[in-house]
Amino acid sequence: MKIGKTSIIMLTLNQFHHTLLCLASIRKYTTEPYELIVVDNGSTDLTVMYLKQQPDVTLICNEYNKGFATGCNQGMAIATGDQILFLNNDTVVTPNWLTHLIDALYASPDIGIVGPLTNYSSGHQIIPVPYKELFDLNVFAHEHQIVNAGKTTEVRRLIGFCLLVKRKVLDEVGGFDELYDIGNFEDDDLCLRAAKAGYRLYIANACFIHHVGHATMNDMVDEQKNNVQHLMGINRKKAKEKWGADIFDLIYKEDVKLSCCVIAVTETALIRALDSIKEIADEIIVVDCTGTCSEVATTYRAKYVSGHSNIGKQKQWQRAVEEAECPYLMLLNVDEYISNQMRRKIRALKRFITEDTIGVAMLCARADTDIVSNESQVRLMQRSFPLLQVDNSTAYNENVLISDIEIYFEPCSQEKDAIH
Image (cartoon, rainbow, N blue to C red; front, side):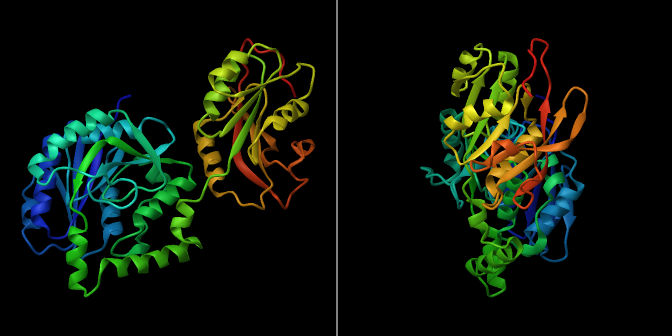
């Protein structure tokens, strides 16, 4: 896939030496198309004078420190890239760094944000390193990327020292929330909003970036007779007031387990359905109405149930439900599948659905005609929901969520009559 330009947005506040090293490493080790946007938050050293002399830098100068979120948003407002990279100026990148990040970001349409491994970070991104001096950094990074080539790790939280985000994700969920003033927790807030939109977050394990850590923050808070821990406490409270709960509890909230029950008639339609749900299903049960789909079910590690072509959909689903082990169920009829966008919405449901929601009503849309049914059906539900009420989404009005999620229906030419 052809990947367009990356907009690299960097904030500066003094720390001239770190900025020099960071820019030099970007210029030396970045082979993909990129633009450099630097937002200075009131430097009083040589930083601004130097940046004004750099022809490859688009510079925004603030008279005072507007904070991390505001500065990043200023840079994003003028960025023209297909993906946006927020990078601290106290970092040093290594060969192939952006290649690994981009490969991870576009590995799936559902991935919204990626980050690297590093020597200094909170969360899951820190690893032990043997080097003592930057002179030995690239030797370590080279060995590291060979061992970790192509490897990724899905996480709930990525740290803002280096974040690569699809532009369309930021257009959808918004940039950094300026509620957090000078800094801290705005990266957590962005990760949570991306998760609520159904996007996944990954570490590109082959990408290693050196990070000094808190270089600007430490100087800034000393001037204000403050400290990083106190600032974190203030912003954590702001996050709790915004979200109604501790932000880390929401970020690390366990997804509900989901059994997907699929009625199958032909291999072609079943493969399409299973490809569309394999990333959101904790368990898949296939009811095979014609006896032709057992090999496909085995390939996808699905439970296989023999069905009958002359039995209605509710009874077929019931056969699958009897084999299901998860507390939540999702039902797909013959020829139905989930699009990338709808899969993201279902992933968000798994994370944020409340216990009092007994079922989720969805719409059925014929993909080849763009016709959407006006009638919704309960297709995701707790096990206690009676299957007889699947077609009657108003029967449990107080406990059924009426969603805008669409299940697509597109018959294959080889399909037998669908079971309805």
